[in-house]
Image (cartoon, rainbow, N blue to C red; front, side, top):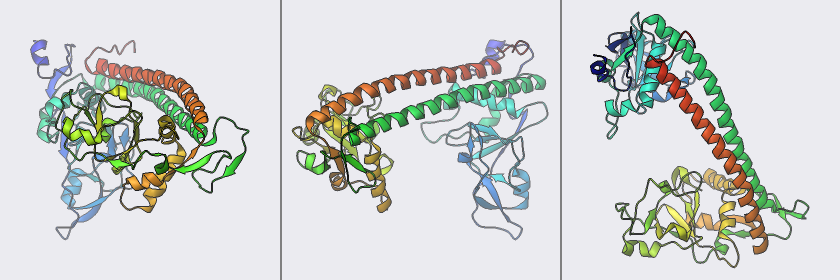
Length: 437
C-alpha cells in the first residue's frame, strides 16, 4: 500500500507509521499575492510596502528598503504579512522559500510572484520549508513546473502537491532539530566560503605584485603617474597593449552558433569561458570551416570580452585545444612574441591594475562596452622577455599551490552541503531518529 501511495510523492518516499500523505492545500492555507498596481483605483486605496521574489532567499526574507504599490483595504487585509508566515516563490526559482522571523513593516503585502503560507492548525510551516528544500534538492519542481518555458508554481500546483506529514508535534520537533543542525552546517559552509574568498584575494594580490612590481623587492622604482598602477621597477617600460600586438585587435564572427559538429572549428563565445578562464565542456558549438577561416585562432592568442557584465574577462587560446575561432562579442589580440609572452599579458589581465583601467572606462562611459580601440590603449608595465619568463614561472608555481588549496576547500564545502541535504532528506522521509538525535 505504501508503495502505491509513494507514487504520489516520489520525491519523498516514506513508509513511516503515523505519517499521512496529504495534498498541501488541506493542512496549509496558500495565498498568492496581488498584481503590481502603481496607481490607485479607488478612493480608499492606500500605498503599502510589498515583497517580490528577490526579497525571498533560502537564508531569509529581506524587509528593508521595500518598494510600494497601491492596494484596497480588503486586499491589504487578505495579504498582510506577519511573523511566522512562510513565503514561497511562484516564479523564477520556483519553490524557494523562507520564514518571516521579524515584524514586517505595517500593512506589508506580497506581489503575485509570491505565495504566503500559513498552517491550518495541525501543520507547521517551518517543517514545510524543509519539505520544499528537499523537493528542490530532488529536482521535483523541474517535474512539477515546466522549466522548458517559464516555470510557475501556481496556487493549483502548490495546493495539489502531495507530501508526507508526521503529527504536528513531530513536525515541530523535526523543524527545530533541523534549524539547529543546519545552522551549524551553514556556519561551517560560511567559513569555507570565506576561506575561498581569501584564497582568491591572495591569488589576485600575488599575481598583481609579480606582474607590476617584479620579483626583486629591492629594485629601484619609478612613478608612472597612473593611480591604478603606481610605481614600477625603474628598468621596466610602460607600454600600450596595441604596440605589443601583431596586427590590429580584431572582432570575431557575427554568426549564429547553430552547429555542434566536432569536426568543425570550435566557435568560442563569452559564455564558453568560465570564471577561471577555462573553456567549458558543456557549451560546445562549432562553425563551418568556410565561415571560421578568417577568425581562426593561433596559439597564444588572447581573447577579451567587450560587452555587458563580462567586460574585461579574458581567455588564452592554446593550439592543443584544437582548431577554434571566436565570436563577435570577443576581441582577439595576437601578441608579438619577440616583445611579450602571451602568458604575461594574460596574467596582467588578472591584476588589480588591469581591472582599475576597466573600471575607470566604465565610469566614463554610459554604455558598458569596451572596444578594440579601448583595449589597445590600455597600458601595462613590461620587463624584458627573460624577466617575463621568470615572473610567469613564479606565478605558475605559486598559484598552483593556491589552486590546490582552493580545490581542497571546495571539496570540503561540497561535502558539508551534501551532509546538509542528507540530513534534511532523512528528517522529511521519516528516517531520522528523534530520540537519539
